Image (cartoon, rainbow, N blue to C red):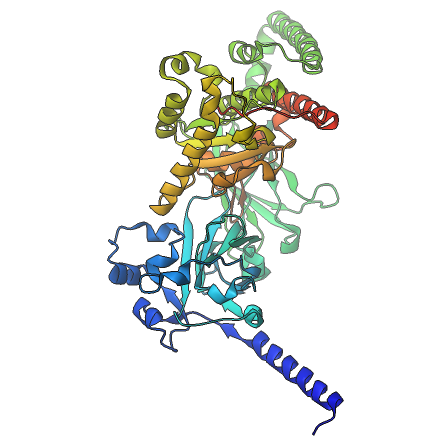
Amino acid sequence: MWPPTLTLELLLLGSLCFGAHVERMSYRPQNCTLECIRRGVPECEYCRITADDVQFSLSIPSNSPYGSCVPWPCHTFLGQETPEVCQHYVNAPRNINIEFEESEDPTNDAITVSWNPSQYGIAFLRGFQVTLQALGGSQVICQLFLLRNNLSLTPAHAQMVFHSDLFTHLSLDTEYVVTVLALPVPERWDQFYEKKKFFTRTCSEKNGLEECKKDWYPRYIEVHQENRDVLVTFNLAPENFEIRHYFSSCFGGGLRNYTNIKPDFSVNKTHHTYRLQNLQAGTNYTCEIAADVVDAVRKTFFVVQNNSEETLTSHFTESPSLIMLLLVGILLVATAVLTFTVVYKKRMKKKTAKTKLRPDIIEQYYDKKLDEGQCVLLDKNTRPPHLLICYSNNDGPFHVRVVLQLAAFLQKHMAAQVHLDLWESLSIMEEGMLAWHCRRMKECDFVLVICSRGLLQNQKNQCEDEEPVENTALATIAMIGEEMYHAKSLGQDLSKYMTAVFEYSQESDIPAVLGLASRYTLTKDLPLLFSHLHGVALQKPGVNLLVENISESGYSKLPAGAALQLAIQEATAFISDQQTEGEHVGIPIIS
């Protein structure tokens, strides 16, 4: 007989060895069929499932929405012979890691995803679905993996590492989100998946600085004429490129003008201005600018050298009195315009400093020509996206005012055609609230639900003497959720549906039935909302799209944005006071 101490040490050593063995277990996808998985063949332990295999085994037509990453119900694959395997809950995976892989394409990146299964419900785990989407993009790439039918895992296998297949053709320096979903899909829709955001590598990180220097070129060029010379301003390469010299070459009038450029980085590290001299008057020049490295990409721009100075001099000589009168008149007009602008801006500041906005503030913004930026027009011939905004007025008039100001801002500065019940009262009176929502949901390109605490009020809190229109609240939310899950089951794109919360609300205020919709926090995510509405990528290799009027810091510079900001501040103060006083809100109304 072994001593008890020795027996305990051997048991501990054995458990540690078993744990170390489990930690070393790593599964990579195998090529196998659904039939092989169903029969539980040992060689089909962890298998990739392709669209062709789904079509062949399940008789799903080739134009099925498999590529849209539908969370296929478990019984579709594994529950036909043994339905009980698909009646259990599996918790979300954990420890998602992104592994960058080598690829021969220098302009794109490639990754694989790895993760650990959760120990909760692991005995009923049947597989995983991995989806990848560029942030702000609509294209979704998905991969499906299944475990063999008779494989039984224990909580000790929670240290196993599962891997995805290779994701290729990913744009460099772009933010993506990867989602790993555990199968079978449970009835609870809050803890069965895990997601992670990441950036692909930059050109220099993937290919090295030497390979990326020649691919860089100035994208911002601004030209100003100063007497006979021309001032050219351009953006400098990133500091890690270590590019210290540039050159410019201009051709016009049969002559070539070459300029060496050596920026002073102690003055400005992002932009530099240089002077083009000895240009012929009245001559059009075609110029190129590039980094002074071998085989660098050149940026072309044009310079028109006019002879306005000579013309002005000749007129001055011939008619000095007329020129003097003209200059004095111009000076007086400029002074008057400047004075009017200063007075006007002071009045506008006083208006925006008020704690309350007049009811006709929207009409004021639309009827008067204010000194603010124009709408972002992607294409004059393109129909603007139609957006239906749904919300709850249960949080008080201040919250309704925020929604109203948001709708005005979206329509005026984000090139969207907004549909709001406050603007279509006549149609609602003719059709009824629920019928109007049904019609608008079908007609609009996007549906945005503004979520707040009032949206989560339970139906049991409703008063017995409430008006019939208030009964549309839960019905409307249920209708939107039903449309979303119906679209999901058919593999249709869910980008039509969005939810948003303001800073005085929380993500927990979003109803669970809307959990599959895209989520935004306003006004921080205004650029992402713009990207969603217009399908415009905010980031591409070497390019960052920045629209000043809709940035987090820039939107408030516009009158409509200032009104939105003030409304949010008032709503925040009002809701904070309500919470302090412990008052309870009534029933939600969706509009």
